[in-house]
Amino acid sequence: MNTEILKLLENDARLTPAQLAIMLDGDAQAIAKELEEYEANGTILGYKAIVDWEKTDCEAVTAMIDVKLTPQRERGFDRVAEKIYNYPEVKSVYLMSGAYDLSVLIEGKTMKEVAFFVSQKLAPIEAVISTATHFVLHKYKDKGVLYDTNEIDERGNV
Image (tube, rainbow, N blue to C red; front, side):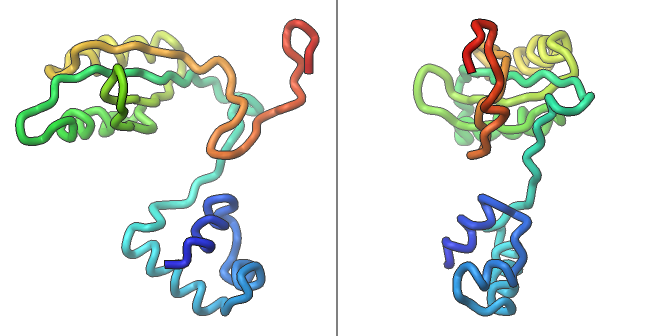
C-alpha cells in the first residue's frame, strides 16, 4: 500500500493521478489503478471539500455531545452507536476512552434544534445514561486546515 498517495490526497483530494505521478516520480496510469483499488476496497471512503460556512449565508450550529452509555450484551457500544449515527444531523460518532463513551458531532440550524435532538432523540435511547452538550463557538483549525487566522478578538488582539 502506497501511504504517500493517501497522505497527499488527504491533504488535497483534488490532485489528479498525473499530478500525483509527478510528485511521487511514478506512473500516472499505475497511480490511477491504485486509486481505483483503494476506492473499491474501502481504503478511500470518499472525497470532501472543507467549507468555511461562516463565509456563506448558511446559518448552522455545531455541537459536540459527550454520551455515557450502558454497554449492550454481546454488542458493546456498536448497536447504540449505529442508532445514533443513522440520524441525518449526526456528522461523526467516536468511541472514546475516559469519562464518556461516545463523542457525537452534530449540526443543526439553531441551538433549539440541537437541544431538541438531544432531548427527544438522543437522551431517550435506552442505553444512554447521560449527555453533555458543548456548542462550537468558533473553528480555528479543522482537519488540518486553518480558518481565518487574522481575525481580531474583542480585546483588539490579532
